[in-house]
Amino acid sequence: MIQQIVFIILAALTIGSALGVIVVRHTVYAALFLVLTFVASAGLWLLLEAEFLALVLVLVYVGAVMVLFLFIVMMLDTDTQSLRQGLVRYAPLGVVVALIVFAEIGYVVYSREMGVSFGTPLPRAGDFSNTRELGQAIYTAYGFPFEIAGVILLVGIVAAIMLTLRRRQGVRHQNIAKQVRVNAKRGRLRIVHMPSESRTGEKNP
Amino acid sequence: MITLFDFLALSGALFAIGLAGIFLNRKNVILLLMCVELLLLAANFNFIAFSRYLNDISGQVFVFFILTVAAAEASIGLAIVVVLFRNRSSINVDDIDSLKH
Image (cartoon, rainbow over all chains, first blue to last red; front, side, top):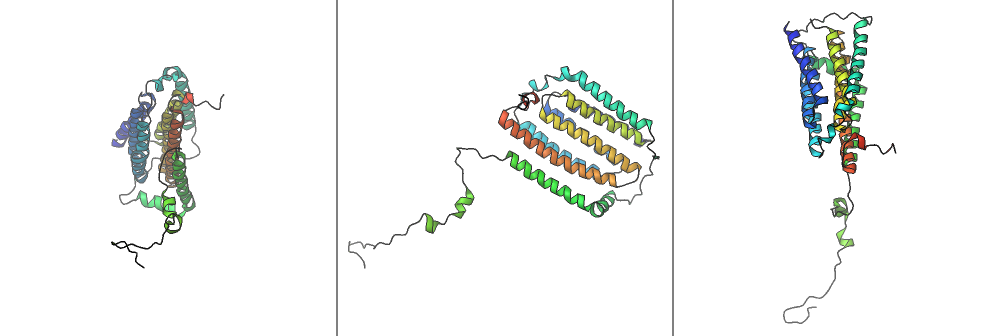
């Protein structure tokens, strides 16, 4: 009973904040609504007993990805008034497409048994560890895909750095590698042998 | 009791909202990326709901991989947006039509 109440509250919060993402005028508010959507979804995932992924969703998405979004939104100086001009013009098309997609999904979901009976699962025992189960699956059966996921993250890092790296022409800057590579004794320093002079002016041998 | 179909309906609604956002919003590239995140979240919902009701951990492993790919996608997408803004001084979708002309 209390699970149903929690489900209804969190589902309403998820749907409402997802609607807020697409209709709100300011991009910063849209990003914050998306944060609220993720947090409410994490609550729903806790209800489905996927504790590890719920925490990962909050840590990775709310903590990293959405902060990156907010950072970019605040870095780019955009005109918020003109960014929302077409909303009313395209609203009927968007609503119609959304209703059609929702009706299709609803038809598929509610009209078929899909050959599997979905009984309500029993709650897990108190000492059941979702993280242990997930880790055992990832590091045994899904070991190779897990390494590919690491490679994908590496490619993401390299691509993001290469895309945003720029060398402006005509700006004086240090090339530290070149400075380190210089051999001062042979390249730019010349030692001249000359006789030293004493105070009285006579030359020392 | 909460059935599987409640979760599937919720995920379908999230997916429809994300799709509607892509259609509604013809101006702001960053908002398009946010709508893609909504679509991926809806897919993750399906995986986790089926994982729970079929009592199979593999669904959660796939959600793990989808989160990885979504993080890489967000970082590269935002890098592209930054480069776009640097070159065109605008992130308006209507301005990005060089290939059309």
